[in-house]
Length: 216
Image (cartoon, rainbow, N blue to C red):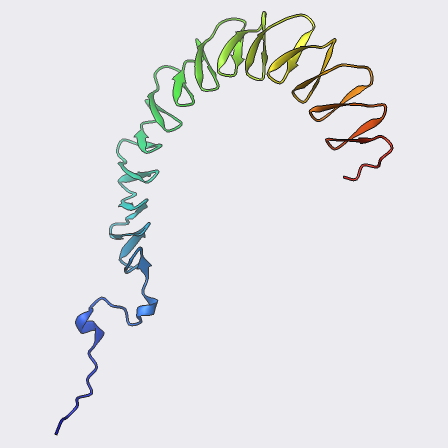
């Protein structure tokens, strides 16, 4: 005669850390973890002790470390984050993620630095400061003899003005939102286009017959 023993093994014997309900297990990446004692940092499990927090896929201790764009750095000497590096505000500059020496009255010029008393920052490029010169895009120009048209330097001439990056003769042409057109008494601008104002009109950037009603 064969006897059957109705025995159901306990999960805790084989899987001591297996939760009572497997379906309710908290996942981190491809594994389960305990949120009360562990951290899930972008799919990587770390120990949660000593007030640790996530820094990208790593963990760090906020009381003594800094998280600089996902990179763990030492926090000592009142340092702050500058991109993925750290800097000391009392003696260094953070110029768009690049650490520079502060020196005397230096300021950031994008990722570089300049001294306002003798230099100027022209769209991230340091130029020497001179009387009568100003920035034009990344270059500098002589305001007495030159003109700056949307970042492009041109010689200054009587009767000429800027139209976008170009110059034009104001007696012969007209500028319509950066586009040069031949000038006439009946012409007007409509956006970048010109039109005959005797027969047409501008309806929110579109040219339509003058007797039409603007549908927009």
